[in-house]
Image 1: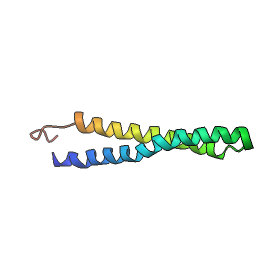
Image 2: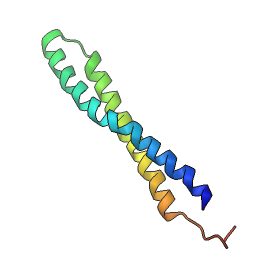
Image 3: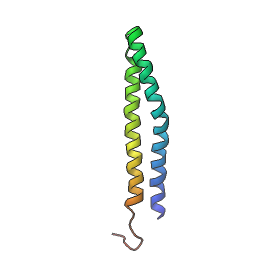
Image 4: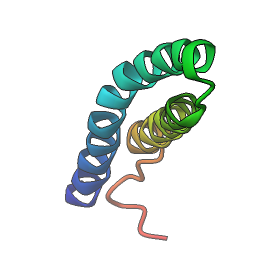
Length: 80
């Protein structure tokens, strides 16, 4: 059972990284659209989209790791 603890910690680490990205990405996308209307600069919009994709991917990896922690446990007698 002690081999599953790093898996859960790694999953929580992924979700901890994803949490700020889930807040900053929509903010940057909104600011990016306003910057496109005003100055025709796409830098903030592209950065917001990249952060949004990173948030989605890190959340997915964290949820996959949590599901592996919950459902892929082998019994202690089963070592194969």
